[in-house]
Length: 168
Image (cartoon, rainbow, N blue to C red):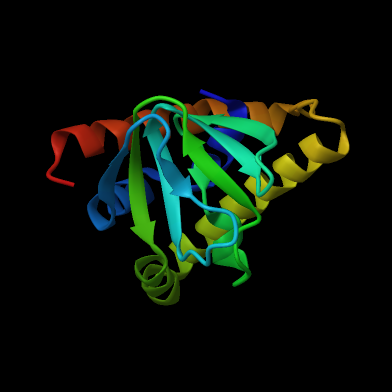
């Protein structure tokens, strides 16, 4: 699992993970399928449970690979602009789909979740920005982040277990 995948989960707790598993639905994609197309307006968060995708510009230049645990669509939850890149499955992918309206309802009615969720999204986006501005090199993690990332791996595995054992 890529370490960037762990930042959202570092801010969430086990109850949040259970809610996500219950509130979402499983989407499956074959190799070559587009999860997201550049220029679309989307209102969702996808969490890759299994598989690998490539992120590419509208012109088709590959800019990143994302693996299990990674979140997709988080920027579109923050703003309402069309997507700037496409996401294509490079192998079979299983993803948890969380509709934006369901997330917004949870955020509006659960201030603790809202705080943890937006904190996790901020950490995730800050890490991606640092990677881009450092030429693709992952920034070092301090002791606090190392501890949080270790716990977040367990939370991701819990989410994956919930989605395998439930009727999600």
